[in-house]
Image (tube, rainbow, N blue to C red; front, side, top):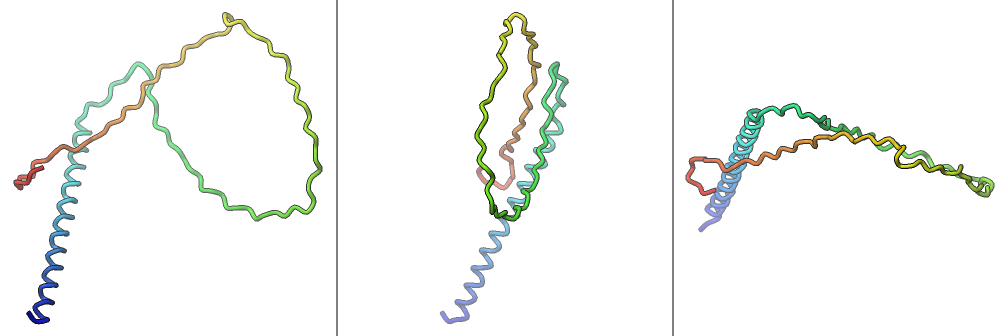
Length: 130
């Protein structure tokens, strides 16, 4: 086999690999879009939640501030004088009998609902086994 045939076989091999890889990527993309559409449709078809007698928990929004820039280092030339700690005195504690303390029941809160959508096997009609 001469040099030109080897080069042709190399190019044909690379083209075959690229074609198979491209087909797999496109198949995965199409399957993912079908799963998303199916999950969205099943989510919209689900019954709307009914009002519960107890209040539900609202979603929590968390805002994150960026870290502040570091302040320039300060050089201390004269340390502060040493101060002796002063003892802390507390006022006397008075105890209240348990019978006099008002007791209010805590409100019952319905926990948030978590929905997990798992796509099932699809019938692709291609004769492949799942």
